[in-house]
Image 1: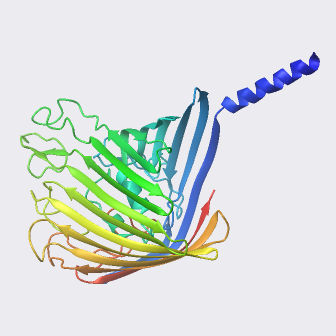
Image 2: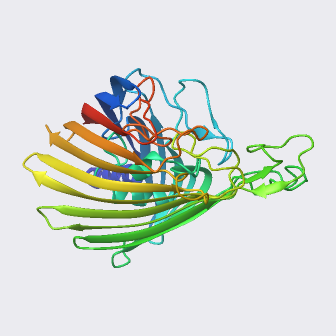
Image 3: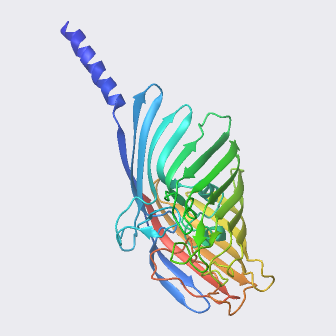
Length: 412
């Protein structure tokens, strides 16, 4: 009898344990010595996140029975060169970042989820679907000097990588190779916001999706996303002011398609991307400001190809990418740039890697003297740069720029 009771107690304890949450602390510490060389000035020093973004996070999952699970994910970026936290949340999906200076916020991801055979529903802040394509189909990565030129410009604003206030649905993994995700994020504006009343009601609303197919060594996916943005009053960049009566659309969108094929000895990548901003606000054309002349549409078209080659405990990576910034004003006012990138990653262990990267950018067809017009540098841009450096080197509109990263990354 006693043995039976002990056995029953043990089984009950096992059942209780299996239903409890499992929580994991994880992260990346990536630090490098980086050089950003321009035709006008250079910048060098200790940077961070140039192979993988430095971060710390907490995630957990619980089996709640009936084939369902609940989970959460909190992830924050930090500056590995100084220890400072990086804020990244937003009041809505078009406002500037907020949060205490150097405060640690979970701006990379903050979601709670329900998972089952139907897939996964997430609520909170997370990557937008178009970001996944940029990550999956960029041979040289999305961060650091070697990243594709596609990642270096941002016509879209704060929803280029992530959206707050979102509901996301992820397809289940048992669809015969098909996969995808869809996101709707609320701008959370009052229905009478703006002048005239209601002009800004949809401001900051985001919606996007991704659908792909993967079988064996082949992978292909397409994605698109749009953020509704309305500005009121000529020359008023985003908000509401006395006397502003004209409501003008300033919507931003991204669309891309990517593919890869793994031959074993080499893996090939390709990615095409289009970013657009309707009815731009300010005058000027150039990589630094990424604006067209007021009232014109702004469009950034980019294409990237690349390869990765495993070699012993390391991997060689190479990529070529090109980008054109169009504003409808004709030749000589629409800058373009080409970028080549080389990188080598040597894995000391499953968690620790050394890396060295080089990139060169050539600026073309820029309009010298246009307001805010400067060339694009190899390690700089509106979206991705050699983070942790005090600034970005300056390059003239028709010159070349070079960049280097020498670093170490540790996953924990």
